Structures are given as structure tokens and as C-alpha cells.
View 1 (cartoon, rainbow, N blue to C red):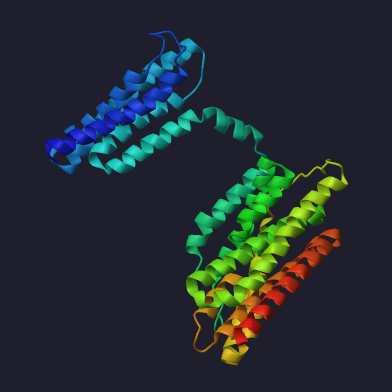
View 2: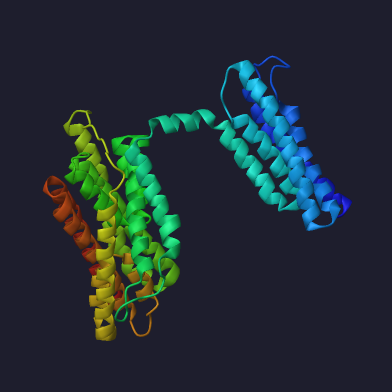
Length: 430
């Protein structure tokens, strides 16, 4: 390593220590000079010491010798720091390991800035400082979190980062087969959308939280939003009209998402699908606004209390994901059996669970073997089928007034979409 690179890396090591030291020094700024074990200067020197120790180890030339030198330097440093911090804690009558961990980290990151990727060292230094600075916020968040929330968060993280990487990504069973990874991704999406909606209500309150959660969930899966809302309605967690407004919001987002996919995949279909989808979006949006406004006005500004007990339930989510996966597979088999003539049948079947995949697949079939009118009809059939699945979910799980509200919204979207498609096809045929 030439002198320029070495000095640059040593500067980063010094900067890491200085950054951590600024945060620690600010926290102890009220402590009298000489009454604290480490301040800004000490942390800066700790980072530089780690960098120089690594540079000295590199100069040894052998891997064993370098490891021994760096290990011995860190052991001596850790012993001295631990001794001073122990006396400082005793004098202050406190019991905390945060500062000593920060000092050890400053040394290690300073050393890594010399022997490793300097960008990783710098990023880790900034991240560590951010964690130290957010002490009050983190402690407050931990104090407010409930056990069901923590448990659900851990389950969702395990589903995503522990189980998903080991789930097979190959189809099993008769053609076209079931892809376990796709089914598990559906489960993660369902759980994630439910968790986002729960968090939105906790942070923003009932009305804004339900709508913002539905808006975010609609970007991923409006079906997942419907399932979550239906379960909330069945459990009495919120007003049925408000939860139905969330379904309408997610549906409007899904319509716009289909328009976006068509614009990217096959812009020539826009003239046929936009009128129907735009009218359906308008109807869903107006319903959501009217539902929230009417709900508040009917109670003269007093809203019903909303308490979401659990972000999501694991087994129901997995069970519904398996069901959707089987629906997709069965629909693909029907489509393969009937060929091009079964495009509408396949679109209707797959659309029960996923509109996006139908939109992408159909767009790729234009102009051969599907014409523009046939492709547009298949996409709109998939959208209508997906609305039907929402209605079935609302009736089977949510029931009662929630199902009635979703039925009104669904009928309006069907009517608007059908009129728009009919007009577009009639105008195009001229």
C-alpha cells in the first residue's frame, strides 16, 4: 500500500473515531472535565490507534504475524479501556456497557479501514453513531411495543430471511407444477401488507392509518389488503365502512398499477384498457372518500375507536397463500389445455389471485397469437375476476356490513369498467 492510500485510510479511521466521539461527547457534555473516561478526543484517538495497529500488522508481512500483532494490540487496548470504564461507572453510580462497546467498535472499525473495504468501515461508523444517537427513540419504541407486535415482526423476518432462502424455487408436481417459493412469497406479501396496515393505524390513527396502509398495500397486493380488512372486520377491529374504504383504496391503486404495467409492456393496448380502468379507479376513489366522509358526518365528528390486536395470524396467512397458489396452478393448466382460445378462461382463473402476472403474460402475446382486442378483454376479465375474489373474501370472512359495503363498491367498479371497455372496443372497431 503506497503512502497516499495509507494516509487516506488513516484519515477515515480517525474520522470514524471522531464521529462516534462527537455523539458520546455530546451525551456527556454536562459532566465536569476530568470526570469521564473518554470524550471526543479519546474516541478520535481510539479510531486512529486501531488504524495504526492494523497498518503495523500489515507491515509484518506474514498473515500469522499480522494476526498476532493486531490481536495483541486489541487485547491490551480492550483491557485498558475496560479498566477505565469500570472506574468511571463506579464513580458515576451507573451500570452501562454502551460506551465501552462504542470504544471497542471505534478501534475495530479504525483497523478495518486499513485492512478492509474503507467504504464498509465508514458506513458502519455512521450506522453505529446513528444507533447511539437514537437512544431515547429506541428505548421509547421498546417501551411501547407489545408482545404480539414483537412476535409478529420476528415471524415476518423469519419468513423472509430464514425460510425463503431455503424454499425450493423449482416447480413440483404435474405440469405446470407448484412452485413452493412463489407460494411462500404470497404468504410473505399477505403478512407484510397486514403488518404495514397495522403499523399505519398505530402511527396515524384509524382513518388515516387504514387508508395509508391500504394505499401502501395496494402497491403490492390489493387481495392481501382485502383479506386483512376482512379479518379486522370479523374481529370487530374497526368500522366496516372504514375498512371497506381501505379495500376501495387498494383496488384503485391496483387498477393504476395495471395501467402502468401495460404502458411498459404493450403501450398499444392503453387505448383499450385505460378507459375502463380509469373509470373503475374513479369509482373506487370516490367510494373511499365518500365512505370516510359519510362515516364521520353520520356520527357528527365522533369516530369509533379502532384497536388492532394482532398484526397478522401466521397459519391463516399461510393457508390462504397455499389456496391462492393452487388457484394459479389450476388456472394455468386450464389455459394450457385450451391454448389461445382459453386466454379468457385462464385470465379469469389466474386473476382471482394475481392480476399483474396475467397483464404481463397477455401483453407478451400481442399481436400474435392474441390481437389487441382479445388481449385487452383478457386483462379486463382478470381485473374483474380479481374484484370477484375480493367480494368472496369479504363475504366469507368479513361478512355482514363489511361484505355489503365491498359488494356496492365492486358492483360500481364492474359497471364502470365494463362501460369503459365497451366504449373503447366500439370506438376502436370503427
